[in-house]
Amino acid sequence: MVKRSKLLAILIAGVITTTAFVGCGSKGGDGNTASEEKKTLTVWSHFTTNEVQEFEKVAKAWGEENNVEVTVVEDQGEYQEMMQAAQSNNGPDIMLGVPHDNLGTFQKAGVAAEVPSGMVSADKYTSQAVVDAVTIGGKIYAVPFAQETTSMFYNKDLVKETPKTMEELVEMAKEVGFVYNINDFYFSYAFLAANGGYVFKNNNGTLDPNDIGLGNEGAIKGLQFISDLVNKDKLMAADITGDIAKGEFTSGKAGFYFSGPWDVSGAKEAGLNFGVMTMPTLDGKNPQTFLGVQTSIVNENSKNKDLAWELMKEFADKGQDIVYKNGARIPVAKDYVVEDEYTKVFMEQAKVAYPMPNINEVQAIWTPAKNNLQLLTSGQIDAATAGKNMLEQTAEGIKQIK
Image (tube, rainbow, N blue to C red):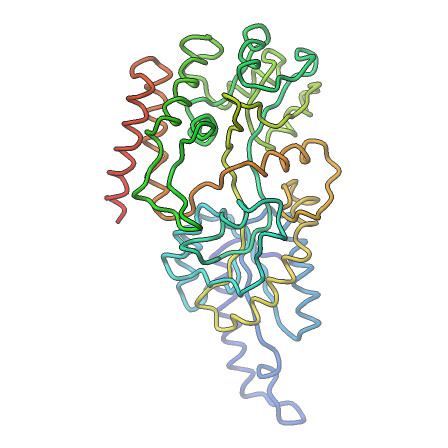
């Protein structure tokens, strides 16, 4: 049975440990103890209930074949709590469904074991970015299971020919509308990155938090484009929210909407005649949308680490079907065939997406970015000032983290 609380998980782990000791005093007819014959593994999963149930089936079948008692726990608590539990004696051996931008925190806390050589390699996945997402300091600390990124929705009743460039989209949008959560850096980063803006410099698999590219020439150019959408082209209000933007698109008021795969079901339920396309170019370059990767980790503190990696391999082999069919997620395996037209587009966009930074310093970005985007779109500061502020305030925030 799938369990649904961390407290219960800890109690389960304690019961398992107690049972093992009790077993030591109960010998079978051949003099061997049951506890010596059967090892235990505990898996905590942050995937959805439907996915957890399927992963539990995989774990049960694998456990029966390998004489291992596997307990699978559905955990919907905070990642910080999961990390703290992993440091305890009763923590999980495997943690499924950890977003890669949390990986740096887990690694820094000493609970993310380095992945065995050859288990994660670029030739298995849809892009190098998938591997970059689980790499810290040149070492791989998690196994990728699913990915997500953002792209451009469009209303087929309003948009008869899809634009190839953002410049064309803006002109068309003056007639049919274009909306998105413009003050959310998760979305707007794509336009900074199109011309060479970046968060942290990636030096061959090592992110440098001292090299911040939010105030360079390319970033400022992207910020100017964002400002123009509101202040020059008047396409959306400066205080637009994600919910408002989604509502305008699903109600048929806006022809274009920049969002992610989580909004596909809402558009379908609204009965909208819509499509999704890869991002049009900006200044002749591909906007690098953020890439998020759902990963899984073996606990460095696991007493059965080698066994945990064997089960992780089984999860990875069977997991693409589970996350796609039961979680409506985008697979990471390049040879996995998807049928859904929308998923195909997001998989294609993901090939040019940029993985959100996975080091601990990433938490210093979000507040300065949001605040300065709000000042920018409301016309209180210009693009150059917004970029300068983002850079300086992020750098100051990183000092507070260290």
